[in-house]
Amino acid sequence: MAVPLFDTATALAPLRRELDEALLRVAADGRFVLGPETQAFEREFADWIGAEHAIGVANGTEAITIALRALGVGPGDEVVVPSFTFWASAEAIPPTGATPVFCDVDRETMCVTADTVRAAVTPRTKAVIAVHLFGNVAPIDEIRAVTGLPVLEDAAQAAGSTLTEDGDPTGRHGVRRPGALGDVATFSFYPSKNLGGFGDGGAITTSDAEVAEKVRTLRFHGSADKVDYALIGYNSRLDELQAAVLRVQLPHLDRWAGHRAATHVRYHRAGLDELVEVPVAAPGATPAWHIYVVRSERADELAAGLNERGIGARGYYRTPVHRQPPMAAFQPDGLADLPVTDELARTHLALPVSATITEEQVGEVVAAVGAVLA
Image 1 (cartoon, rainbow, N blue to C red):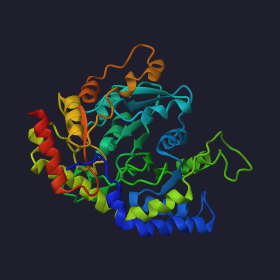
Image 2 (image 1 turned 90 degrees about the vertical axis):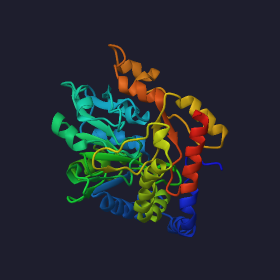
Image 3 (image 1 turned 180 degrees about the vertical axis):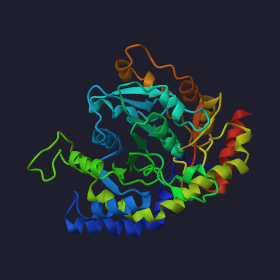
Image 4 (image 1 turned 30 degrees about the vertical axis):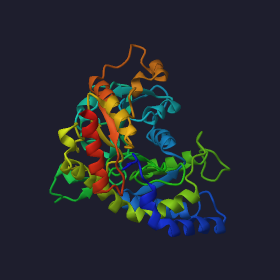
């Protein structure tokens, strides 16, 4: 049995008629930019996240740049960011005029911690980007408490993940979501994401009214009306077609996220943890795994063998961001020493996960992993 690394089609199949109707509704209305669908999605997404404001933008990368500028980040500033992440987390910093400063991550959760961030903070640090990597949840409260700095959550991979209040696994104190933990948060709606559009799209969430207003101005050429201009901004808006598609999917996201979270249990029952190191949820977190990343000293050999058997598997960040050539210019004293990042880059491997992956498919994956390693 072939098992794809990603499967977005199966979850969307029952929604096809509703999705078609949404697209036709936008076409008939004739408003394609900052119209009623975007306004409605922004309200619905903010309510779902638990934030006061959600502002749609063109993609998750520009979301980070705009959010940083809304926090006041600019030339001469530094922004702490993990190196074990997707390129965009750091790529979005230089367009603000600021310098990325790379920090290490925790070996078990693969996310930044208060300690790894603190080690990279200098007097020039203006903000911290904490990535909820692979859907796990970074310790935002601890980072804010230890550093006293604004924290931007890169939640591109964490739509649907949850965190119990104060890390309480009983849930007595309620549930919080990535996107409502820091000063501002960014999302990507790239088609493969947990909440994915039919093209590029992104959003910025915050409960700070001043930050929200600056984001709205920046995404619209630095203007409120395209007549008077207050800032040098961007042409970065979530279009109506994408907003309509996302509105259809949003009511199903909790169910899809629950299925992704339960995949960890399915893999455990099938014996995957006896073959490789499986991901570890952060304290109090229920990750909606966007990517299910395991670790093995034989990661590349395992990927090749699984692909030969029709099982989707790949390494995502074999060369961490701080070792990519364009980032050398921001490290004049030499590359940062990030031993955990280097280890994870070498040993990580993504295995299939989706909102609809079956027990049979999970069993197929684990059997194939065992066969390759044997």
